[in-house]
Image 1 (cartoon, rainbow, N blue to C red):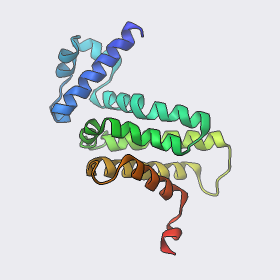
Image 2 (image 1 turned 60 degrees about the vertical axis):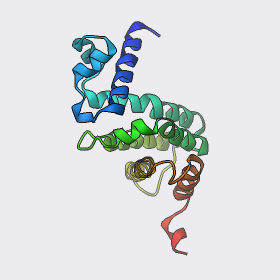
Image 3 (image 1 turned 45 degrees about the vertical axis):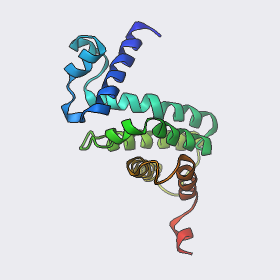
Length: 181
């Protein structure tokens, strides 16, 4: 890995560690750079702000691995398990991340990344849907983001990784009409 990428990873891990011990609002760029042992301009060479670091970590740990799986085999149970496993593996970090709210909050970042992935997957399939594909992508992305947030915030005791994956797969393969029968 080249030095620039190592520095970017060092900054991301510095932020990640800080978020585990402090509220997002109380973390400064100086805290991140001091912990990483670099100067402030180095941070801005790699990231725009703390939200950008948060999105980078999400993409690196969750979105990119799932995206590669979806590109190879489509959205299947292995890809769904990959997504939920990534959140489960760093549950405490993501519990803290979901507390970052507002216009650039973590839920919004997560939703927009999932929406983009859904749109890409729909285009790759090349099928014409009876509904607008952007609207369908929004529907599935917001649903997935809400299920993950609920699961992460409720803690491991509420539902295991296997249980949440089974439940989510059932939800996306059945309509509301199936529940009403």
